[in-house]
Length: 174
Length: 102
Image (cartoon, rainbow over all chains, first blue to last red; front, side, top):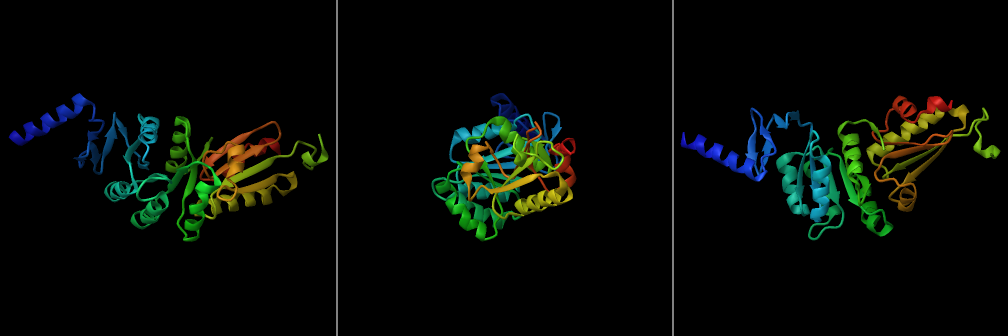
């Protein structure tokens, strides 16, 4: 009885401070304010994909979350490569949006590790389209690690278009 | 209008620009589908340019391409941009409104 009361109290606190965005499915468990489990819902919508955003800029992470809120995608984000890899192991994302230039583990190194953790998961490197920025990516391409490119900065509708095009495995009018 | 801008039927020719990232599987599928499309419609004078954004990022900036793979169709008074899975010839034809250009 006390356990049930405590659980309800925790949910009430989450609801109150606006963190409880997710309704728990029949097999879901709460972790870090998100839901892990077989059934995922948000505001009555079945979630169709998990997007992992790895970027040291909080403004960029917020932009991705904002662009994809009220959609059928769940967004989890990390501020560096190391944490991004932990989330990749934990959340098994369907798509990764990865910054190239980050303090600590670089985007290229993070991409290498991601390829080992979740091979086959599409990765978009989000970066400025300048030659010197792209130089490290030419080398990793020769290692056979697939990725696509997205230009930084991205508008909100551009973020949604990219995610829709990957998650829907279809062409989208850009 | 110059003759170089005209297809065999006299209509303004269609140009396609495909922006990809290197030789990733998605890029290769897109290349194959677009080349197959051109083979099927070989009599229509469709021009194709393939841009590897890793090698030529400025081209992507010039055409305001924000993600790969993207294909841009111009010509015939139509501009269309498609992004994502470009591996289906049929969907490319429909998405790029090529039937209208034939």
